[in-house]
Image (cartoon, rainbow, N blue to C red; front, side, top):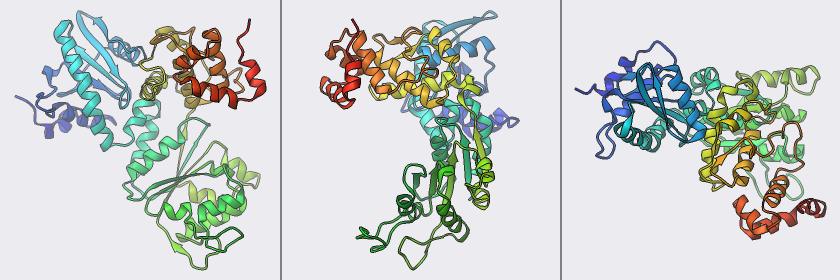
Length: 442
């Protein structure tokens, strides 16, 4: 007799942080799938998301450590593995879409492979998307299990109208986290982002606060600012540490009074927005140097979360690599690429000073240049990029593609996944000096 879905949350227990997720996985595994019955399989199928415990339709599944490790290997290898442990046997694999998850099936042979195929298709197509709709933070945890303690706090903070300050090195994913906070907040307005370091002070002020017609020469019409656009939603201020001092005072007033006065405007506009800000700088140090207002800091730092750099959470590498490789496939850059074990080990020894962004660039480049579905350690182009950064990543990709194709541009374009016309345009755009360097060496 099948356990009712409504009783499964209690059946899994509520003793740990992962218990609610386990209950949702168990319930999802029992739901009918378009006439295909339910994915029960007598408790043989186990799913693990974000390095949490394996869970089946009847609750937690005790998967041996050796089986867990083999399942993690399949994240980047892309091939199911058979693991024998203490007289028992398991088949393990992983899915990459819509975010990474591990799957283990107890048993071997054709019957177990059939169960594995059904589970993989069902979990990727329906179960994971449904879980992501319920919990916007779940894809973040699935790609970066090392962020789980931080995500647990953000889940509780997200519905509250507290401002959030995200601190972390460049490339750690602060924008992704900010979008997840907005999605989990329940606010009905839009997510509006602005980079405080991207524009000069005068333009940034107009961009943030808006402009009334006639405010200055060239202001021939009213223009709504980012602050008004984010009404009832979330305003994400990236690189808040680079906000000019005069604008800091104006932003402080907005946060205090909940109203905005556009440039050239006489009347203030009420606003209801939640501010999420991010920076790679140390704001306390900037406060000490006098370049950042202490009162604005405490208005922004309702909750401060620090994202650790990738080199301090290397266990996340297989999960991040799997998610990035899936994205490359969707974009048509080296479709179906996988990493072999040596390439995965090679990744684990890099410093990744550019964090996830550097990892993404490395995988994109290797996938574009690889002539085979499997990316080997030897074909991991630019593995020493953190020690010798290329002057221009695109320039380096084109140069290597031409070298591998013997200077034949049609073959180089195929390796890059481009048309010949696009390759010619990009070579022309690089300039004369770089065009000379692109010529293959004799």
